[in-house]
Length: 576
Image 1 (tube, rainbow, N blue to C red):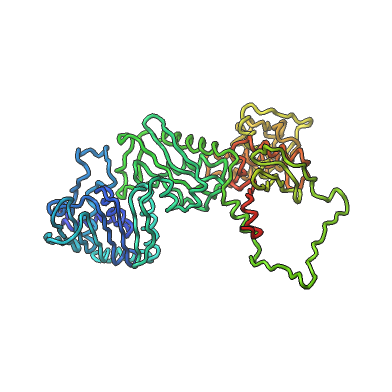
Image 2 (cartoon, one colour):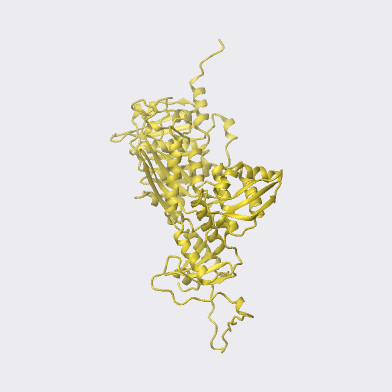
């Protein structure tokens, strides 16, 4: 015969190749089992990144002798009471983890069933199972996995350095800790405490433990329900972002997942606020009926499949955009903290001048050769009711507006702020943009590549008020432009648009590319740095910012203003 049945230990090793990729995979399976057993305290111990030892101790319901023996058999599980693969209410269920782990390591399990008078210990070494023996152990389970992959030496060479393997375990445990804020988690690596998360009364408190207090201080609460779909969590303001998506935590029915559909929805929702190489920080929890999601599509259970992926994506994008819209002109506190740090002198030691010497340092008075070079005039005292962004007091370097608020001051980047205002207005007017016909249509010569890029979105450009048509092989004839843009360099606008479309064409969808088009148009119209503004113009800009959604950041996620409270200023001058 050419076909033969494989030996059980070889079958387990094959299964281990699917389930046990690295030490973090083992940690995931064991900790999920602990959580499914109702544990409220989980301790993980690693040595050499998990290569030498992985220990997981929990205070869950535990196992008796019979359950202990069945736990190391293939396809044996307590997590499918109704044998329904589409109604899974637990984190683990495959029934392959323990036998797979035991086939490639030295596995020791000690467990005491809730209410039992004695514990039992069972050992599996390289697939060789020993008989259970009595042991001493409190309620719960302690599992040790020693010498991972010793039975399959070829797998060892694929492990990374202990520090790298530890980092994977930390990321995995952080995700599980987020989805179970009421459970205490402790991780020790080579006898060193990596983290010790105490039980939390709220999700936000746990997120502060894992993602840092800075995130918690700048997080927007997200909550939306659409039929049986429920979404909740916290997302960062656009001005708080990172260079990669490592701090984006997604959960479906309590399971940590890495889903391309959900990640794409996040990108689409933030496209108006962040550059393509910046990523927001967030933790989102999606709950929906079991029959509408399949969690059994990946051996490691990190991917899911939705019955109606379009509905899920639309719900997520809508929830994110509504939450961001509620932030109004708010910007992250980290911006102010960075500003305070930047203002600090290299030496914080202040030496009081000696009065006994009769010498006091002289402060030179500013002198101006003409009134035109002086700063913008100061305003009279502000009225009792000060608006959120205060009243303009001066313009610095013809670029920054200084305003006094109720509790401090703000510094506004006039170009970035106006760019956001124009962008939002262009979005709102799409399809109804007031157009400005050119007295003499302008012929703009472009390269062949630029012509091709612009032709792809010509119809959409018309909806924004930019009316043009091909003129020969290498030129466009521009007849009308959006009235909002005023007097602009039309050739500069078209070449910039073509450059943006060419650079991002392969990475973004058409809708996302058109967002870049609007951003480029807005940039060409906005008040440039170097333009002197009157006090009335500065105050008008501040009032528009207060009334415009998302005005706290420019179109690329950078802050449009920095706020310093009185407390911040007092710190700068050593008053507190």
